[in-house]
Image (tube, rainbow, N blue to C red; front, top):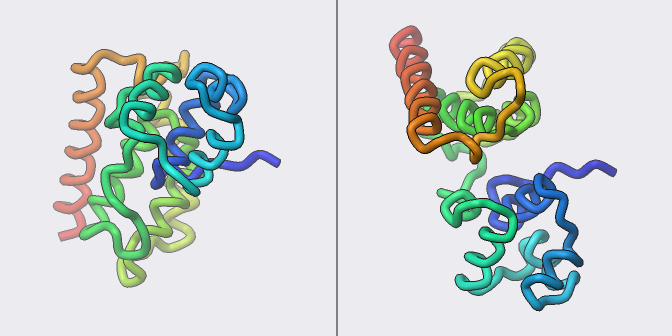
Length: 170
């Protein structure tokens, strides 16, 4: 079963980072001196590693600490405006997430009165792959492998697109 980690949680982000570099719970546990079961517990959000262990985990999987720690709790109504949801979707696509899966996850986090219509979601799903290819190149570069100025430029593009979307809606 191909399970997509919940990227709104620390465990989900830890799991995705490990998957990207091909490390199993057993391999991570051996390198950090923990059991594979403990690593699975982190991934399942049953427990969390100590800060120094999380830092070592990030170094092991090649991810900065700030990219492992979720920036905020998400759930229905998490975004103040549709533009905020659009920014989050663009950030996830630029970071390498599957555009369709990221869109559906963000759509679930929008307040019910602001929810996206099913036909809007369907239209945006196809655009996501093209957007990712445009932002990251056809070689499918990983967001983390880009330079800091390149990452900031992509996030600024996301902000500008969201602002334009707000202006068009208003």
